[in-house]
Length: 241
Image (tube, rainbow, N blue to C red; front, side, top):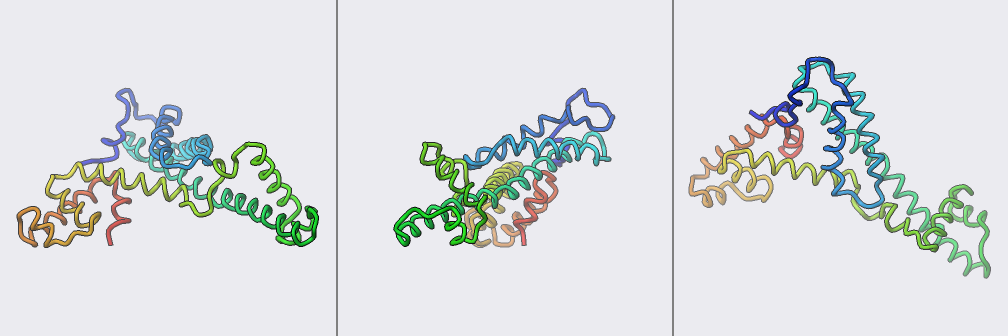
């Protein structure tokens, strides 16, 4: 059976002492490597790594199980902290870009209406923003005009998916496919076709050359083995009704 200790094995020299966060720092790199490829350019990888390291320290203090399971315990919490940080940062970046767009639009509208360039106070009053908020948005716009593409690359597009959801969704699917590869071929086929490709049991049975009931048994056996695979326990439970 796949267990956390087989998926994140401790180094051969590991002792039975409490987990040492320094010895587990590679888990931060592993978690970031799984998330980073799916992130937009505006997300600072260093911020995620910092959140992961902080979570690692807290995890080692909280862990009180078998030493062999420490790496898996800490990895789950490091990765979770990175996703939490993405969820925290995403609304801030979106609001900043939306505010810059609103200030730019308001400035053009007021210029047309007043026949002159509006003051910062007039823009703030029109948008119900504070003066510091307008100044910050104008600084962003000025930087963009100077050639620094901060609104296109460093800030989130309000219409783009949440980076946390993108990273988590891609990571979830990758781990799920890896878990399916650990199943017997027919069980993996039945589970994949039924849950990921919306095939019916009749269709699956016909493709495998077995009865509908046998297809159901293969699917159920695969689900049971996936639930026993602790690497994807929470991921799979989120997909099954």
